[in-house]
Amino acid sequence: MEQKAFERTARILVVDDEPQIARVLRASLGAQGYEVSTALDGRSALKLFEDWQPDLVIVDLVMPETDGLEVCRRIRLVSQVPIIVLSVKGEERTKVEALDIGADDYVTKPFGIAELLARIRAALRRSNVVFPEKKETLEVGDFRIDLGTRAVKISGKTVRLTPKEFDLLVYFAQNAGRVLTHRKLLGAIWGSEYTEQNEYLRVFVGNLRKKIEPDPNRPRYILTEPWIGYRFNPQGE
Image (tube, rainbow, N blue to C red):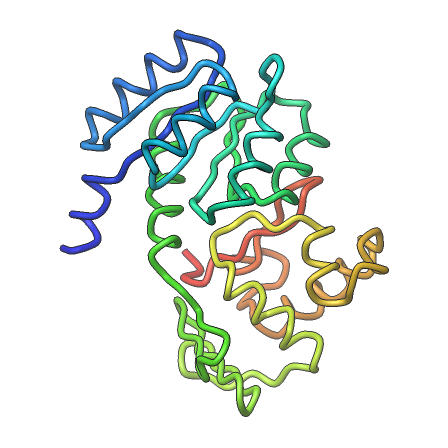
């Protein structure tokens, strides 16, 4: 009940230089009980962000002058508020760059309001969950991960992982539901010198899937985001 109350009162900042999209999102999100403010350019958005302190930001990537990438970059200097970027099909490189800068998710235009609302709810839920560095156990979805003993249980069943597989699973669990680019995953687990080794990551993800997925050929926990990276779904639904 507390989570639903949080979602009804969440503040959402919508940034898009197309007035029609901004109006539609204001009306649609407002009808769901969210408080919504809109900005038609990046500069106004950053000022509104500072003054209004939203709980989530939706920003279009392609805008004149201060674009969506710069908005993401500037927000991440001062806040960890969830950011969902809007992009048109074919902007894969820009989309990946936004996720590497710190955006949490993306929605491709044209999009359905139902899909966007689902992404918003997921992002707001994640923003309320913190995994402190000193916490000994991560419990998320079907997974129970003991950081001290490095033991992993999935729906109560013990799974044995190699050290790197364990580190990769922990990073996925700490970022459940977020789109993680190849570059971000490689840098976090193996270091900056490995950030271009996508094939290296595919091998480890494949090995991890064989151990945690009921059917590795139809993964339900580690989902592939084509050309971009992976998304961890701990509920496996």
